[in-house]
Image (cartoon, rainbow, N blue to C red; front, side, top):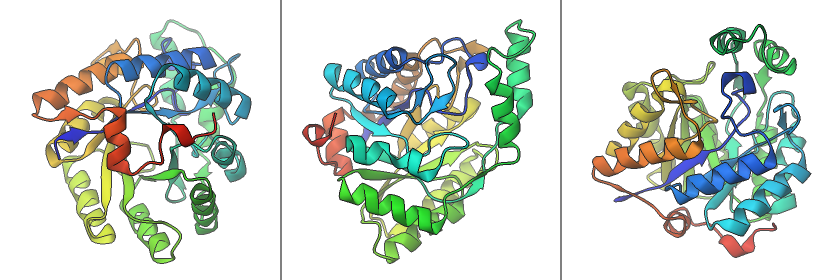
Length: 314
């Protein structure tokens, strides 16, 4: 495969405003960052929304509508909405974006897990920024809650999400944070709930999930080969400083890549990325230096078997 699908995850729900002044928060900032990332090479943009007053992750459909319509009005980039949401959201809140907007793609978390944001990450970011405390009171509460949190994705939840995505023609992007979640994916395929070919994302480096090593990526890939029988495409997230190294390994192995401020705030050691576009530009350069090319949005649609830009509801 010559073409690499380069996804940009614009804001997410893990990093908080204290960690970077460049994290997009308002609908306008999120949409603008997504459009600029697409202009600079992203094939797909992955969208969460936040409360514009304080940056807290939000399931608000009004905010989603503002962001999705703004991006679509200016770009033909593939839009992949979250159904992972943020800490404390119910599965119904997380999934509501799919029937409301019928996106071409949506993330689909493949198992329950410990999903943690160590509080010292936020206090350390505040200290580095010269702040006596985090910018917003919710940030430390959010991190502390995460340390006693199970990110719930039971088989009942997986069936509900699968059925809803299928009803609305939305392609699931299978987020696998560990090897067992690849096997969970195979189980729901055998149950007739999930169609092949699948698109699988190996999420590496989250506290509570598999860590970002070449050996673990190889194991994830070979496991997926067995589970899906070759009927799948795959992409890699390397959280934090592993974003570019794991993206390079995935490129060499024939996979696809995700970057963005959801996953990593730094352009290089000690240097904050000032936009998602900077991360996209760097990863695109690495991909091209390794002898592959970044897919256009329409090429990505064809590779992933998406329903098309004209069939969304926004």
